[in-house]
Length: 203
Image (cartoon, rainbow, N blue to C red; front, top):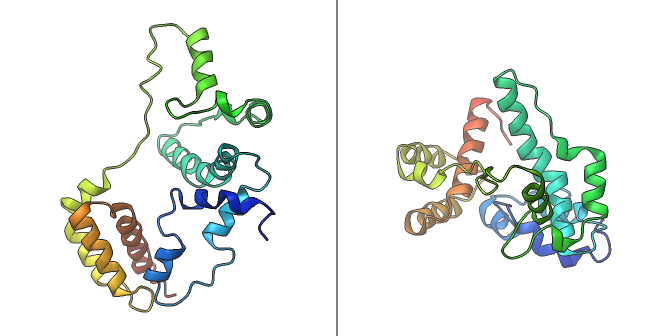
């Protein structure tokens, strides 16, 4: 059940979602029976938010962070026998960030982590580079254009017609070839097919 008023956050459901409702309809050979759908689940996660930014925070906090960021940190640290901590997830810090920090001190069109950066500039030594931090994005397009290209084509050529429409997969491959804009979707499908074949999963 979607909370009243949550529909105004509907555009947020597409952010970071590889296959939205339109793409799922194009790709899947049979209608998906998932309830709720990924889009509906994201709307539910945004319930109770007052602003678009607060809704985006709620969605990220309850999906992207535990399902992506934290699990990657845990796997990488355990591989190196390290025990990591996330001090910004202390309940007091989270409650302060959600309940007392206004949107204008969180982000705008040109700045992010505004309050945190101001505190860092005030409290940390000036020689520290506060702008250096960056994410760990992987060059999927370059991989697919290089040695992974053959693997990608082989794996998707053998994708199950019972699951996926061949025309949609061909459209993805052509879009990547011409515009380079379908790499994440193709990579997701390739990894799914490799997993399905490895464990002989039938759906």
